Amino acid sequence: MKSAETVILPEDLNYTDEHVWVRQDGDTLVAGISDYAQDQLGEVAYVDLPEVGRRLDAHDEFGSIESVKAVNALFMPVAGEIVEVNEELEDAPELVNADCYGKGWIVRIKADDPAAARALPDAAAYRALLK
Image (cartoon, rainbow, N blue to C red; front, top):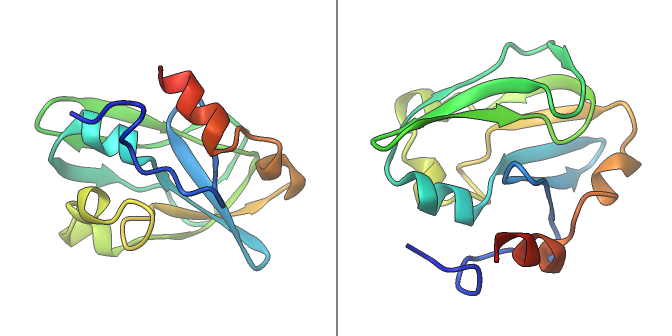
């Protein structure tokens, strides 16, 4: 298992206490789970994706991720609407382990307030939370 010092945390992302990262991409936010979260979970076996068009508040559960170790809920980083899900994860959930910040993204969100994502902890603050 990786330590708080050795996990990969890109500086251009923001993070939640629930180990979800977000990145601004045009007028939407892309979200997934952090390197720390995927490492703690172990081999991801299944990702329960939300319905496109579903509207949720920040911290609402939007799905779950199942590994050989546990099933964990996924929580919205900001309030908004799910506008796309990573359908590749249905057949290849291991993408979350292999490339959690790239091909292993989980959802795209049209945020009610795009600035809310920038208010989330940055990489340094999230790393401090992990210690």
